[in-house]
Length: 88
Image (cartoon, rainbow, N blue to C red; front, top):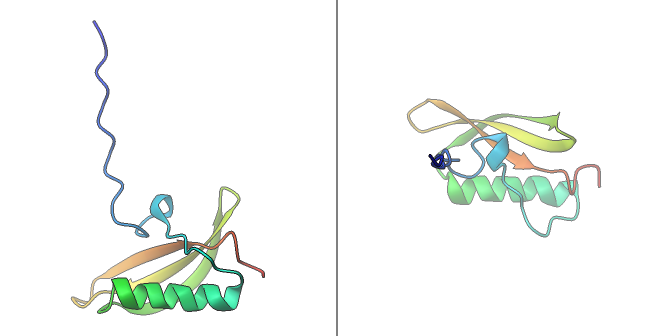
């Protein structure tokens, strides 16, 4: 008997997990990185509000974790992979 491949689990929308963390192209430094994160949030989650922002490290990568409040007052987390520009 041959084993059937299991379908891959859905990954979900960009940024809602570390595995799908958003990478902003062309960012050279932290100033532009943070501005890019806020522009991305405004463009893609226009009705969400930032509650808090913190930096975490996992598997030798750096991430900004933004705690968000949705219009229905529920909460979500958005992750950005900042490895390429943090500290610059």
